[in-house]
Length: 118
Image (tube, rainbow, N blue to C red; front, side):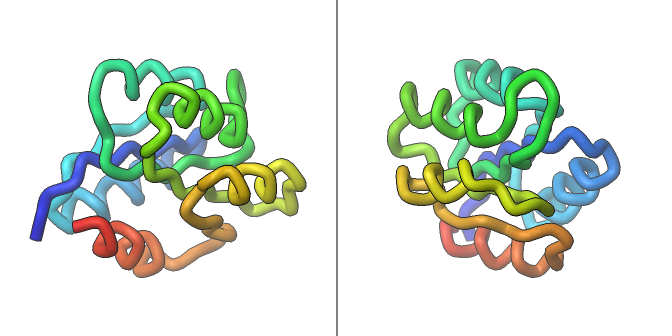
């Protein structure tokens, strides 16, 4: 199995930690950002193979973050996560977001997505 560089972008610190821990136990190198602006900055510092980005966050939401990252890194693999019905998510999915994880989701769903890119 290939180790992936994965970025988790989530403003809920408990969920961010749980995702990072599960992905780390799966053998991946995991970075965490607490908002979209921080995620864009992290992408400038390191190439990520896969990102899980929450939609509703302070500073910069996940959809704006998706478009900011894809504008500079068109091949970025991004999965959006939300617990809400967000019309903007459909726009991101049509523009190339890999999937939408509807909260609450099972950790196995996250791991299954990560395995697809190993």
